[in-house]
Each structure stands twice: as structure tokens, then as C-alpha cells.
Image (cartoon, rainbow, N blue to C red; front, side, top):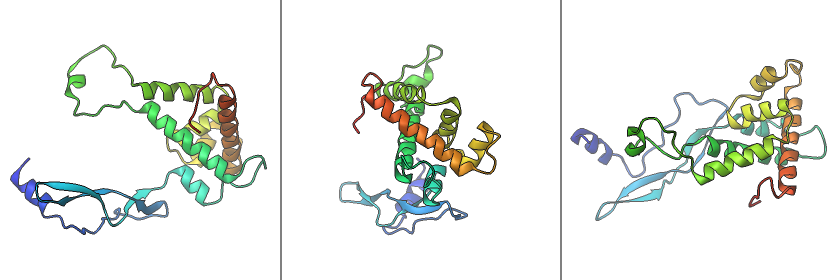
Length: 197
């Protein structure tokens, strides 16, 4: 690391102002906790910063906050739909992650021979299969796009269902209801996957 970069890092203030996004839009919130390094006698210690950092809301969070997940079938409420979508998103992210980063040079220097996946990634993939196999093809595609890949509901519904142009929130609610039911069916069948919930 260059001396100039080290000096720049040392010059950061303890109560440094949290930088905002270049353009703050309606889908930005300031609620993310982050860690800073505070100089200490032998070195530096890490503490949670006094302020909150900015983050962008996911399309599912935006739909929930706008009230678009409420209504529809009375069997499930907006919170149950949101929690199912959030849970699916976490499983999808874990299934897609490699568990390795660019600092693992041993893995990078090898050529050929596919890398093995971690136990947690394999378990997430099995859980996704167990849940997705209990959903219709259209519901599965909408849920994967909105909750897993971060598409806006309007993009996902229009791409999957050309006949739902004016009722996008209703179609998203139907897909999330299918996801809740798939989680329940997978939980009932202990062979599907065991969850901590």
C-alpha cells in the first residue's frame, strides 16, 4: 500500500460524515449499520459507527412499503407474503454465492476441474428445489425474478405474463401466495427440507 493511501486512510475523522448516494431517490433509505476502525494504543479496534449508512431498497421491500402486497386472497396478509419473499431471496443469494473471493489465489490459479460447492450452498440449492418444485411455472419465474434477481414486479410480470399488464400488484400477490404455500408444503414433508423456522 502506498504511503499516500495510508496517509489518506489515517486522515479520516472519527465522526466522519456518512456520504450519501450521488442521487437520492425514493428507493434509498438510511438504515444500514456499518463498522469503522477507531485508533487504539496497539493498533485499531472496530466499532459500530454512530450514524447509519445508505442502502437501496429491494423491489420486494418497495412493494411492501407501498402496500402492494396487501389485499387479494384473505389466506395470507402482506407481512406473510413479504417474509416468504425475503426468505426466498436469502436462499437464492446463498445458492448463487461461491463462498470464495478473489483473495483465494489457490482456487484462482487452478484451471479446469470445477470447484466444489460448500455445504451451506448445497443445502440452499436443495431447499430452492424443494420450494420451486411446488410452484407453478409462472409463479416460480416471477418469484425468482423479483425476490432472487431484483427485477421490479412490473418487469417480471410483463415478461412472464403478457396478459397481466394492468394488474401487476395482484399477480405479484398471487405468486407470493404460491411461494408461501410452497414453503408450507415443503415444511410439512420433512423430506423436502428441515428449517429452523
